[in-house]
Amino acid sequence: MNIKRLQNLSFVRNSLVNKFLFISFFVSLFAIFGSLIRVSEVGFLPIMYFHIFICLGFGAFYCLRARLPFYLKAYFVVFGLATTGLGGVLTFGLTGAGVPVLLGTVIFAQLFLGVRAALAFIALSVAVMGWQTWDHYWAIEGGKAEVLSWFNNITAFLYISGVAVYCI
Image (cartoon, rainbow, N blue to C red; front, side):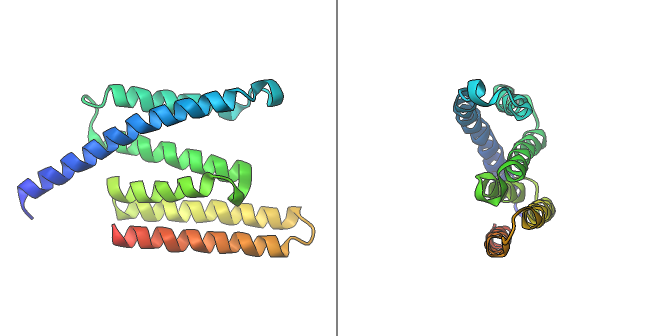
């Protein structure tokens, strides 16, 4: 493989991580304000500490982007997405916004860390979604139709993430 091509690829990946950190910081900043507005109604939940930590982490990593190596930034991005997605699935089930975030985790893990990392996140995501479906099955009386729709959701996640890993 051509060295110039490898240098261009690493430049593109590094700039993609930097742009992702910048956008994630501002999006998560607005999400924090939306989340903290509900403190008077639901109280200050422990997950809100984590939300603040991830937002500040995105901001700090963006400010230090020139000094930090690519893989440290990439691992933080994938870690932030994975924990946000898994927290969303564990809190709101498969009907919440955690599943698309987990799909984004798989895609960014493939782009930044490679196929093995993406396959590991697919396995972790499916395990958590399967556990949520199993737990939900026993919690709802007569919920077999709903569990079937959750199974379809997991199958769709596997299909889309598998195609994304194969095509990227």
